Amino acid sequence: MSEARTLPAELTIYTAAETHGVLMGWLAQDTSPGDWPVAADGVNQIDAAGLQLIVALHRSLDARGQHLLLQGPHEALLNAMRSLGMDALLHQVVREGSPA
Image 1 (tube, rainbow, N blue to C red):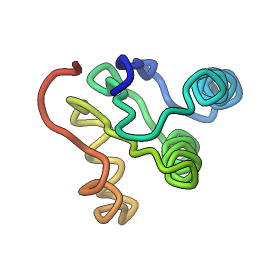
Image 2 (image 1 turned 90 degrees about the vertical axis):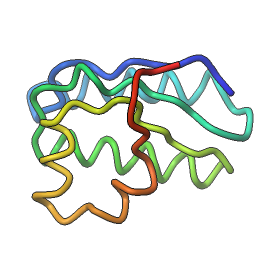
Image 3 (image 1 turned 30 degrees about the vertical axis):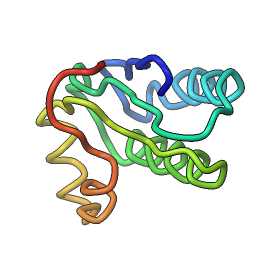
């Protein structure tokens, strides 16, 4: 398992381009199969653009045989996912508790 990465506090349309660059950097650095932990406890602002980044990361990892694990997600992230009907993804990627 790779070391945990940390999502920024704001995952919105205003930070999407910068965050996308960070996520692509993470993907370029780690191609080992298996779990891919990401600390999500600090995400306290999120909108549809931020959720799109999470979905894109999940799909990119899945295509490479890796598994996204959002660890200790903030309630704002959980609520946003539920509000947009992302319950199936929520159950696949969320791990309660603190990041490893």
